Image (cartoon, chains in turn red, cyan):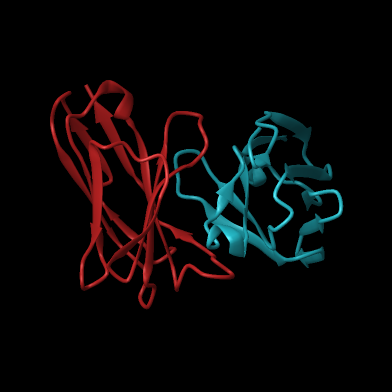
Length: 114
Length: 112
């Protein structure tokens, strides 16, 4: 168990809908990262938060947004969902996100858009 | 050209073989190198972490970094069917604010 908790495990929804994925980082970790992994594809970095502030953006669509709350949990919001958004969404956390940026991953949320 | 190149495989070897997994990279500023293992549809887990050049060994796993060639390797000795997974390399540098840059992952299959 990595100590990173993601909910829900599975999510099935329809095109055009909006969903929220939740992540609780490991105790003491200040950085949270979100990744998207489509079937048989690599990890696509979406966004990084450190202690409540956005630190870096990757290939995140404008329809997607995220935030990190004072208790350090994070939420990824996906709106106007399309079939192509079906993927595994992983959250990872690290202590600070600087040098020796070892990231610990959650089990992921599997999103199916029908 | 991607910053980190990794052959997606699949790489299929018999049980007991020595496996060599590799990544090449273009940014000479990378200092921190990691190998993650990902079982099908599960979250990646850290296997090995190395700083700068050299070797690091942990049980049946050895990570090797050759900064002059911009090449990193992960060796698995006495491979087991339970080693069947996708192996992802990742690396970071101060000039990219230590954001991890990921390889695409190599799918490894160990045949009993």
